[in-house]
Length: 243
Image 1: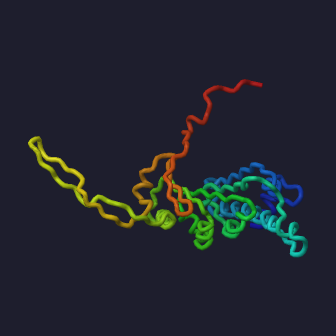
Image 2: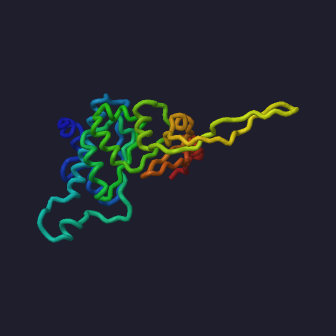
């Protein structure tokens, strides 16, 4: 990791004259997009690049915690390096390809510094393979979870089921048959049973369409439908005018 940091990617994060200043990005609401070519690189190298980026974030966030133990209350406890109405979002997409050690500590402390951590992944196995303990710590610090279409009936669904919890639901116990001259038909009986079951079931997740999902926040389980724009509609068919 140190070799990558110094030799290959040293021009990105050198102290004082780097191409990327993470402190400036975080404190001044700048937009930074980091692309890790997971298909091009080997798994260890992609994970190492993730560690490099996450380590840089951790070092920057650690400075926001402050290291001064003596002084006035407003300088030691209440000082902030930036001021904004809303938390600054830090988004990790496809985290399973570069889940790195230290992300658990960052997830546990960044909330108090007005940062918002957003994690997106297809499954949990890829992150659990890196570090199961750290993954569960990160998951425990995610208060809002949004689950979309799913095919994994094992570890990923078990996480969803435990996060959504159980509830009591009324179910029709039986139907009754009624005959007439024109034939017979079935009607709902008046008997219902109350039983406990999962708030989210695998069949529901498998049936979700694009943009649909289930949000778990505190003790609420909310079905949702977000705007989904197909790729073919994201590109304009009109050629931009020449300068």
